[in-house]
Length: 80
Image (cartoon, rainbow, N blue to C red; front, side, top):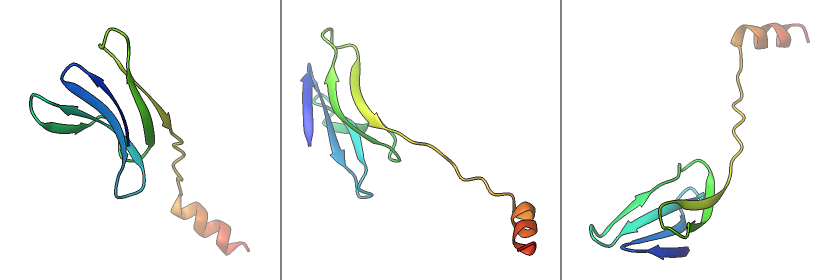
């Protein structure tokens, strides 16, 4: 787990149960954690910009859905 503080907030990254790392923000005022990145992509290294208005992080994202058309698959397997 790595983290950076800004005012009453701490940004940190942590691995989830699925093994994917997410970025979270902890609010001292509310004593609550908020995940700010999706669970399906690795994200980490959070840091605030100098003014504290933006949170930067790195993310490893590859989104390549596999789309299958059942009738085409049936035709291709039938011709083999």
